[in-house]
Length: 415
Image 1: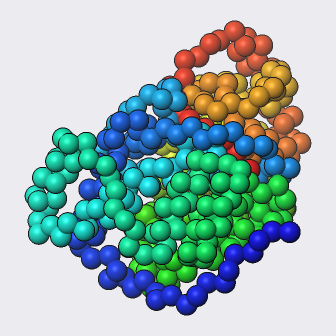
Image 2: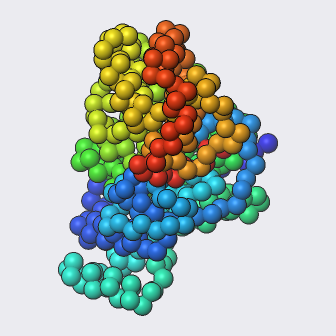
Image 3: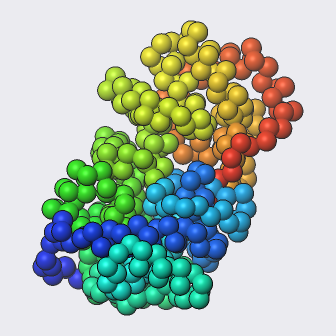
């Protein structure tokens, strides 16, 4: 029997003016500084993130997963960048956890706010002093929610009783700490209980942001830039994944679409699964939405998107020139997807943690995270692909060792 968190006490709502210009400046500088800290890794060639190595945890019985992706040729190699605009907000369990970067950003933002700078020049001078003297980025939390979130940052790198104790302590301090519910869901073995935790996390995140701030940030297109929104977005992503697994497909898709509306740049990497989900659903509305999504991210040449474009061409234009052209483009991007999908290559005994755009691991991850469902939704699509691969000489592709165009870190599955 699980220990239920206490009911939240009434708390004053955050008003839009809660983030004055000084705080905005402090937050922006905190991003650039933490992005350049040693140990950071780039995501999709743009944003930096730190490496983390939490202890291994046992696999739960259910298989709900998130698929947000970070890049880096090696787990410990640093590629500093100048902005955290694309820092990933998904959950990682055995590899990089974006909460570690957020922990640095939150601490530095509080430290900068407390200085009472009168100009941006003063702030920059203080930052230079921090870097020169290698001063710790620390500042005591100012609110119960910040105190609870600091405990969750600590708990996210632990497991067992210590982790559980910190989570419960955080919820006792602030029931509005959405990430606390996420940690409970991550280690939960029962999918229904995990769903309940994700739902509580979404509700906690909404309370923490407040309706006025939520509305303003969404209208301004600044939702992702506000650090306090990310636990809410992680919780809602987790809820969508479980809903899909429980065959509540319409609800799952609507949650994903809503998250993309809040964060059109898709820092969470939701477009990959959402496109496959829409193609799996396959009705006219879903196909239109898939087409819109693929158009929105038309520059994305990953296997996740190029094979979705191929499948969309088959669904909307049939087995003709458009599909043939899409297949040619897809094979150039990643020739391994059809080989795994059709059983020419055996499935791996262990799921990859890293992938490169164009390599076998990318093909495995694409198929595992929605690709197989999307292709299996119509028998005629598989039949067409078999014939097309015979024409293209699939066995010959086995001897081609293509060099990945980019390398990415794949966070472990949500547990």
